[in-house]
Amino acid sequence: MKPLVIVRPEPGASRSAAQAQELGLEVVRMPLFAVVPTDWQAPDPRDFDAIVLTSANAVRHGGEELSKLKALPVHAVGQATAAIASAVGFTVESVGNGGSAAMNLPFGERLLHLTGRDHRDIAGTTAIAVYEARELDSPGVEQLHDCVIAVHSPRAGARLAELVQDRSHIAIAAISPEAARACGSGWRTISAAVEPNDNALLALAARLCEGRDA
Image (cartoon, rainbow, N blue to C red; front, side, top):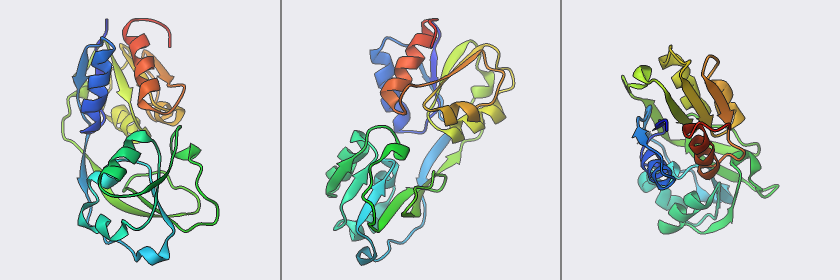
């Protein structure tokens, strides 16, 4: 069985690793980025009707400024983000299932998107970056051989394409078609998960690690 390399930042890397190990996979954690807070100021909550959260990192790294926005309800991209928002005192109004593009956001409301510096714009929202993912020096992926790499974002795919030259013995399991395209060409195989979430991505990765077709 081929090892699975997880390149997403912590703490997501550890969560994905634990889930992959439950599937019986050999896991190597090798984050390409470290998530850190940005210096930001919360807007007047009276200017908005709700908050959009597409990553739990916005809550983890939002800092004290988040407390100024607690009166606003939250639309969360998924259950994990919703749980963290609820744990710090936000009221979660809706929870998506299928990535930011599939969120059923209320039409006509003034929506504040708390997000990372590198993000996908959501129509009808005002975005403020409250964290960023900084590239790590010499993560070690350029030395990988005969493995499967789980790619959780287009930015991670693009970074892999920059770092890895010898790709012919590496299979890519990407969380979305966009993440797969960002990896470029020349890999042994490259496949996208059927849904843009960790469960689907790790199921795909397990098949590739076991030598089965995606």
